[in-house]
Length: 314
Image (cartoon, rainbow, N blue to C red; front, side, top):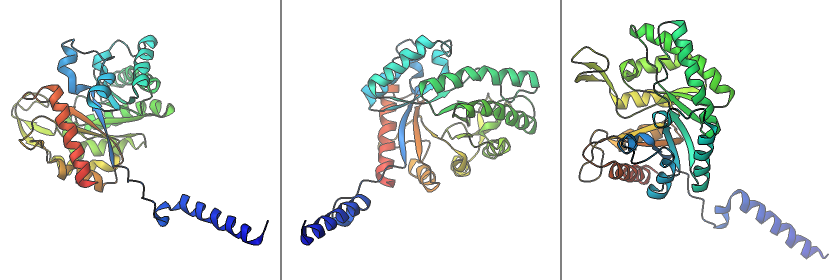
């Protein structure tokens, strides 16, 4: 081989290596930056259709992909309550997801007891009740389960008990590589400072928060934690800013929209600027819960709004 041929091959190899590292240096277009969040769809958006038997849990992931173009889903255990340990059912659900290119992201768990129950026996039972859903989530390929941090007693008493219950559940979930996240879902959990302090008290890397843009009522006219007209709310923007360092997802709640397709209750650009500035990378779940617009249209409008946010903020 001549010296000139050797030099040519050597230079060509160097150029190929350089292009692999920095293709834009050779004039090739740079790869587009990955968006700072991906859109998922929370099953609760269709709670009317599901409770009305117009849709089933098995239908949900297929509808999410085929009708809305959303390839990641968030289940609610209420809609397959007796199926957590039904391997045949879970296998059918997983097959439908695989056949339609749908990723299972999380399961929202309700009705399995208070993780912040006042007695040791009650807490242990509640934690153990959640195990089957952790196992189901693992089987379905989920990354996370969403739980509640409810209990009875003073704020300090419930916080101490909930931290204990969450830690026990997190230990079980960590063995199978799952996260446990708490949503602001009423009672003390709607208080931003209380919820953050509870999560920090747990102190486990697989425990975090699922910020929901609704559910920030901390005082009602009845004095009841759950019922009555809300007369004081925790600042949602302040809460999300405080929570993002320990958040492992976001619930994009919507109720109503203005003529321009913006959410009436939440300034999405302001909220997502906070989320982006936190360095968050993950799923943002559509959770439509309005009464004026149909569930179908509400989901579409929320998706369009999130896509507008991504286009604006990058």
